[in-house]
Image (cartoon, rainbow, N blue to C red; front, side, top):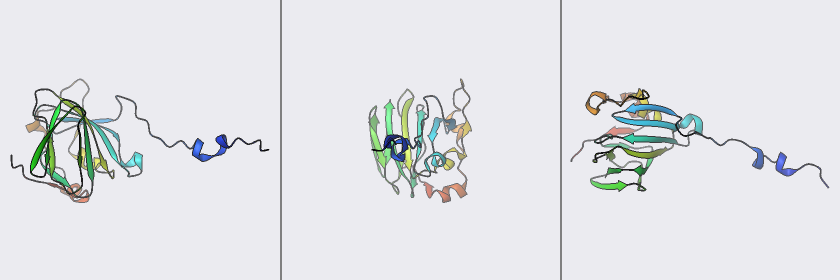
Length: 171
């Protein structure tokens, strides 16, 4: 009979490698007029994914674009977002999920009168570098800047590194 408890020594039971990010924590930035909180990125997940929370004000959201090397998924927590899927739109409300495979032209826009809360993620990770390149750190208690004043093109080098292209909006 062994005196060694396998539940104490077996790494399947003792390895601690999970990531926990408490509510209200993460790097929060203003991207366009949206507020993004990076919960985890490539550094924390060994390149597996990028996961963000977002608040999208009325008329907020990026213009049409395509990620050729990343899949992207969205889950709407509250409010409604209009998503572009190639050349068609779909409106997703609270509880709605929208998956964008790499190579698909897309965007999201808040067409409503109230801010939308959502979470979104990318696989693989790393693209947070591109998303946050033109961002400004959010200032607690302050509203994000208005959309027109805050738009800055991401650096071309990062657009190429993350195989992302800005595309025209046809509507």
